[in-house]
Image (cartoon, rainbow, N blue to C red):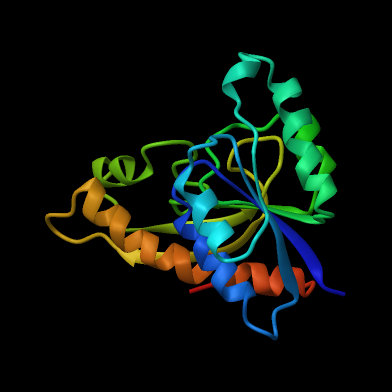
Length: 197
C-alpha cells in the first residue's frame, strides 16, 4: 500500500525538497500529496508547486493564541489530501496534543541534534558551548512532548576546531538531507528500526 504524505513547513523547505526528490523515485512506498505551511509567503510552497505537489497555506497569525483553531484550519487540507503520514520539515509551530494524537505513530520530525541532547532551539550553539566532540541530527516520531518521541534515525558529524554554530549547522544539514529521506522510505514500508548513518 502506498502511503500518502503531507509535509508541513514554515520556510524554504530544504528538507522538504530532499523528501520530495526521494519520493519521486519510482520505487518509493510513499507519495507526496500536500505541502502545507503556516506562512503564506514560505518559499518552500513555490518550490513544491513547481514539482507538481499540491500546496496549502494556513496563516497562524489571524488566530492569535488560539492554537486549536489554527490547527483545525490546518487539518482541513491535510484530510482533504487524504494524507495518512505527516512529516514536519522545518515547521516552526509547536503542535497541541490534540493534533499530535490524531496522527499518533504517523507523524515524523527531524531535529538538528543528537536527541535526547538539546531539544528545542539553538542546538548547534548549545553543542559548541558544551564542548561536545560531535553533533548531528535525529528523525523521530512526534509525540505531545517536544522532541521526545521514539528515535527512528540519527546521523553524526564531528565538531571541528574553529566551528561556529553556522558552519556546524551547514554540515549537519547535509546529513539531514540524507537521513530524513532514508528514514521516511523505511517507515513508509513499515520498518521502524532505527537507522544510524
